Length: 390
Image (tube, rainbow, N blue to C red; front, side, top):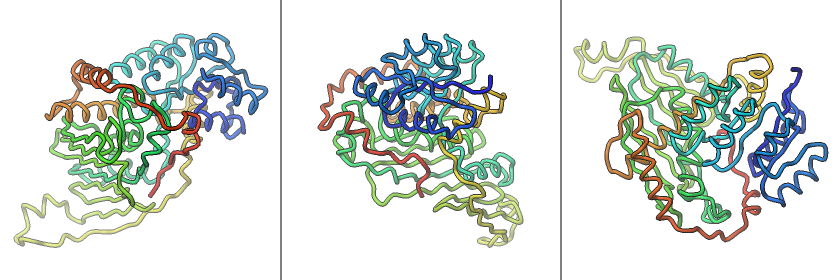
């Protein structure tokens, strides 16, 4: 195979961006050959933009056509696993948009289908291409900071207005999106958090639904996690603050790192803190340390970087930067946070999937139909912030 023929399933905001990147030959070894959307208006627009690309009204027809070797799944969250499983069963490679799904149960079924197929399975965690996050992962995972103590991420610059939420009936509903800021805006951050610091043993969370907006899902969330070694995680996010913050702080026995405003600040202690804590005769000593500021050494390639890596994985078996199976971690954190908030209790991991699924079903039944004040098509013009914003 000299090139990968891609089909894009879902021609909305993000799907149209992927289609454009492929059509404009921004991905070496990849070509756009098929598009699918069940909206006739979007089909017509796709036909006008891409006259040599096959357009389909259903994902089943695209998968049956033989027009693609791989698909990008950019459909509503609840359909991610349905479309991906069907694609794997047809022998296609799959790159899904975030989140991997709404329910851990669905994501596990998708992973099982990927394993059976032997095809490449990726997820669009584009913030993994940010060089500062990658450097932080190297520092933490290599033990350069010593034993992990604490990770705190305040990520509150996801500001959204009521008109944003009113732009489509599927937005900000349990039945449409499956959640709020944790499911829509923050999957990237939750993924990066576990990618660098690992998964906690248990979660306690407070998710405030409709705190700042007239919506039924959460627009503020605070998560507290505990790890086996006693380390902790704090994660705070919202769409209702302006100006917001984006500060990631990680502390270990050997120092601290902070990522903020496009730079990584690193403090490395000359003596491990624990040795000073129990060995110093002073009550409040200052521990000598080395300080370094690290700036990005390469661009954040974002969506194109993930798509290029995925293409090379198909063609040359290059290791994936974002394996689709790892989408399970972010969904687990999100579902655990919801379950904790709904039950006002700690939630241990692995997640009690049956308990979560039952309560989510109640949320969906009790929600009622949301009326949009603008058309879904108008909502597509509200360009989301896709790259890291400091």
